[in-house]
Image 1 (cartoon, helix red, strand yellow):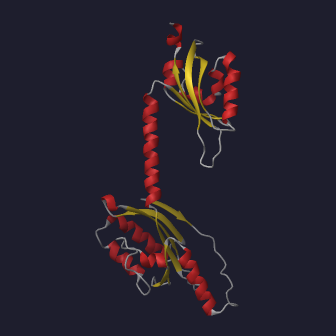
Image 2: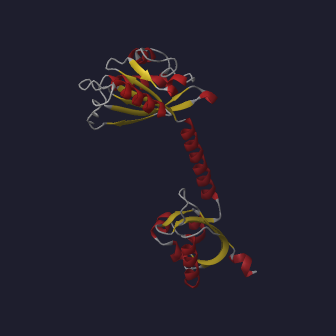
Image 3: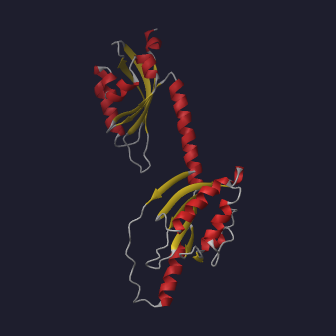
Length: 276
């Protein structure tokens, strides 16, 4: 469970005096209904004034949402949780109480609820009521389970990639055609003698044999503007000046926005194979 606390700027209230009460009511109803997250407005005493349809329709077993509606005392709900046995929600309830009592202008945090396959993650934001201006507090709760599961999956993939590349004999590198070497596997040290620090400082093209370097740079330039996947051979110069022939698959890694410029190189030394 992680906390992320922010102090908000003082925002001048909108002038709605020229609108009729019915117009204001309809506007508020429309705004609340547009939220995909669960939203509740509370007064300075923590009493729920109104909730949006998402809050009303919520059917999960989260005690911070389920069954609560206009007229319920949200501070009392938090106090009940504080005296209960659900340790995960204790810190959450304490944070909500602090925000609704004005000790925190804005509270932002993520928390877990449930067990095993029923485990869910929620993003919570609580804005304190403004007693001077008579503005209600706002409680927003969003189910972020999908996002958290995706992050877990990405971390797992990253860990698998790290384990694979750290133990692979292949020369694996990720190159950004604008920024240089992003990653070079430890096999560069075993095979070519370059340290991780050295590979991070030099242009990867510098370890390519002088006679192959122009062709290599042309391949990088091509990969900066379009997708490619090609098997090529290059001679590579090791730190001790010895020359190694490498057969390499060069492929474009397309960015999330569809841009190019990142290349994945997976090479294998074939010096002995070609000397037979």
